[in-house]
Image (cartoon, rainbow, N blue to C red; front, side, top):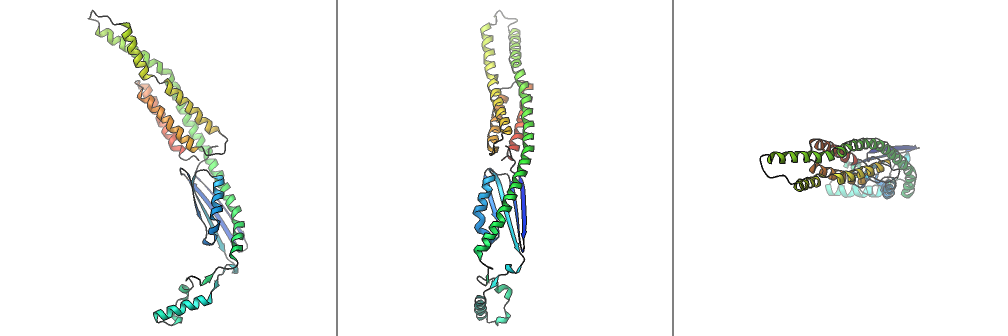
Length: 294
């Protein structure tokens, strides 16, 4: 199943004085890259949150942001009076100031003055229990959005494949005509050159020249490989497997362009050249689109 790498999901909850919010965003990236932003006191949760992302996302640059706010009395930090007094004494002595002249707002930001409230292990576990379900829900919303975007992406890619298929059918039709036209032109030129000469054109020479030309302009193998790549591409679009397909599609688009370039180098006919230019244009659009496929 093709999914886009662009998406967004969020979830939030309130439990008394506690409020949690989770946002997850993803954009294109060649591999899976995760960025996790959580409050400092929840930093221990980062490894398990990253693992949660990896279980449902295969490719893309994913940013997970967790916010937490407490509004009740339990959120208040405890003032370490001994540490505060010691800082005040040292600063007063160093600067020759009275302790009452010091700015308390700055003193309380010094290390060890404010102690986190309550049992940190218990608070971390409570936060884990609240945040994990929110992350699961936000990731589910993200995957749903990426899947919806993937449906639109698959429709667009299918349209380009159909466009290429129609032009390839026309190439298959006119390719034999190119040899016939060359044979006719070659005979006409040789007849014109030998009109006033007693020398007759040798049939085997003419046949040899036409055979060489036919070999140089034969695109049957390239068309066959193009058709096979198109079939493979359509199989990927129709696949129900829950795995990343974008890199395979990117490789196939490069192979499509390789065959198209080879055909272009063998196309002496104006209509064939026009058709292959249109095919290459469609392949370029496919290459651009698959960069957004997971």
